[in-house]
Amino acid sequence: MGRAVAVTAEVVAWWLLLTGVWLILISTVDALECLVGAAAALLAAVAAAAARRAMSGG
Image 1 (cartoon, rainbow, N blue to C red):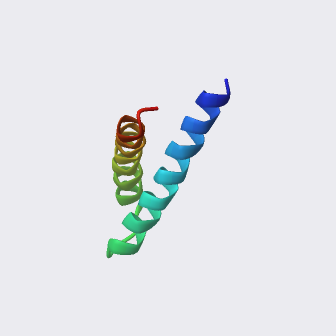
Image 2 (tube, helix red, strand yellow):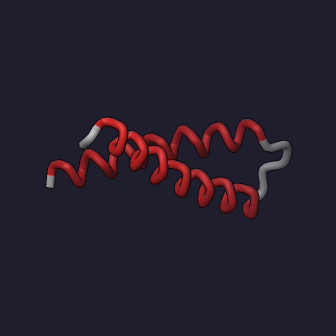
Protein backbone atom coordinates (compact mmCIF):
# COMPACT_ATOMS: atom_id res chain seq x y z
CA MET A 1 0.00 0.00 0.00
CA GLY A 2 2.83 2.42 0.77
CA ARG A 3 4.35 2.15 -2.69
CA ALA A 4 1.00 2.78 -4.39
CA VAL A 5 0.53 5.94 -2.34
CA ALA A 6 4.05 7.13 -3.23
CA VAL A 7 3.53 6.50 -6.94
CA THR A 8 0.15 8.23 -6.85
CA ALA A 9 1.63 11.22 -5.03
CA GLU A 10 4.43 11.45 -7.61
CA VAL A 11 1.99 11.34 -10.53
CA VAL A 12 -0.23 13.97 -8.89
CA ALA A 13 2.76 16.24 -8.28
CA TRP A 14 3.89 15.91 -11.91
CA TRP A 15 0.32 16.44 -13.11
CA LEU A 16 -0.11 19.63 -11.08
CA LEU A 17 3.22 21.00 -12.26
CA LEU A 18 2.59 20.20 -15.92
CA THR A 19 -0.98 21.48 -15.84
CA GLY A 20 0.26 24.74 -14.31
CA VAL A 21 2.86 25.13 -17.04
CA TRP A 22 0.18 24.45 -19.67
CA LEU A 23 -2.10 27.13 -18.21
CA ILE A 24 0.75 29.63 -18.17
CA LEU A 25 1.67 28.96 -21.79
CA ILE A 26 -1.76 29.08 -23.45
CA SER A 27 -3.17 32.39 -24.56
CA THR A 28 -6.87 31.74 -23.95
CA VAL A 29 -8.16 29.80 -20.98
CA ASP A 30 -11.47 28.10 -21.71
CA ALA A 31 -13.00 24.79 -20.68
CA LEU A 32 -11.78 22.81 -23.70
CA GLU A 33 -8.21 24.10 -23.38
CA CYS A 34 -8.19 23.18 -19.68
CA LEU A 35 -9.54 19.71 -20.41
CA VAL A 36 -7.02 19.02 -23.18
CA GLY A 37 -4.16 20.40 -21.09
CA ALA A 38 -5.12 18.37 -18.05
CA ALA A 39 -5.39 15.17 -20.10
CA ALA A 40 -2.05 15.74 -21.82
CA ALA A 41 -0.42 16.60 -18.50
CA LEU A 42 -1.79 13.40 -16.94
CA LEU A 43 -0.32 11.28 -19.74
CA ALA A 44 3.02 13.07 -19.42
CA ALA A 45 2.94 12.70 -15.61
CA VAL A 46 2.43 8.95 -15.83
CA ALA A 47 5.24 8.70 -18.39
CA ALA A 48 7.58 10.82 -16.23
CA ALA A 49 6.92 8.71 -13.14
CA ALA A 50 7.44 5.49 -15.10
CA ALA A 51 10.65 6.81 -16.64
CA ARG A 52 11.99 7.81 -13.24
CA ARG A 53 11.22 4.39 -11.80
CA ALA A 54 12.83 2.69 -14.79
CA MET A 55 16.00 4.78 -14.47
CA SER A 56 16.27 4.29 -10.71
CA GLY A 57 15.61 0.56 -10.91
CA GLY A 58 12.73 0.76 -8.50
